[in-house]
Amino acid sequence: MTLDTAAAARTERAAGKPSAPAPAAAEPDVRRHELAAFLRSRRERISPEQVGLPRGRRRRTPGLRREEVAQLSAVGVTWYTWLEQARPIQVSPQVLDALAGALLLDPTERTHLFSLAGQSDPHPETPCPTVTPALRALLDQLEPIPAAVQNSRYDFLAHNRTFGRLFCDLDALPREERNSLWLAFTNEDFRAAVTDLPEVLRALAGKLRAAMAEHLAEPAWKALLHRLEEASPEFREIWARHDVVDQSGRTKLIDNAHVGLLRLEHTNLWLGPTAGPRLVTYVPVDEASRAGIERLHALVLAEEAARTEAEGTAVTAQAADPASHAQAAGPAPSAGATETGHAEEAAQVRQGEDALAVA
Image (cartoon, rainbow, N blue to C red):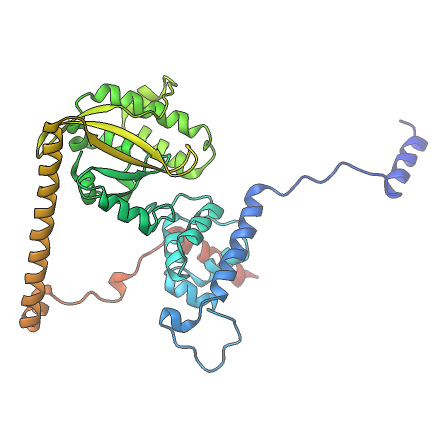
């Protein structure tokens, strides 16, 4: 290229000739700004009185102050300020859980918060909008038939009392473990109740792979897959086969720990699109199984009645002698003992404060 040609090219650029468009904003940057705006809007709608804080005389800020949200969530003020400023910082699911409580988010808002942050909800059953009061009533009305609501990731969102004791004591497990695949590959009680375990394991892995095709980039699905691969060599081996299985129901033979063998027809009743949540029922296919389900239901009711009676006795005893109860309970924990540390956020705060001090 000659000097004259180069000069002409520079002249064209200076004259405003079109150039290649600037790349669009990266998705993480868009998510951070959406998250920041959402947090500000939720903070500004809450009055101090709603969360037990004094209003004070001079308050120009609508709703809560940033430092008040930080206090309620047990995070640093600087770190929370950065979050509302859409700074590129990491936020853990535990902190999001605390923010959701501090900002009084309803179930839909909570789901939106975790989606914007790109994190999976540590409490997927925290009142789920899928499980309406009417649907919960339906689960109860179906008793003694075991029934549950399950999402496409095979998390149990709700269940009736009979289902809670069909394979194992589901209510005794943490929420994050109430998942069909997690139970089938890691829970010994659940595995003992399944009479055709190898076939069930292959089917569940194949169903998960088929369902996951529409959710490959979603954090909650990736988190479940990672947990299963870390916890179960058996799952890793089956998952590597890339088998897929449809969602059809079938007759299952379950060896219940309390009433013995049960032959049940497993049916899926979808509550919306087939990729979404569904009502799962286990209907006895013969009289022996029906009698067994009724005995299991009676056992659950008896245990529930005994537990209620024991709790009532304890409350009565406490009311009769409160001083003795307080002494037996021991000294109350100090305020410092109840605080939850967030090492990652604290480190970021210290770095920010050091930078400000240097400046």
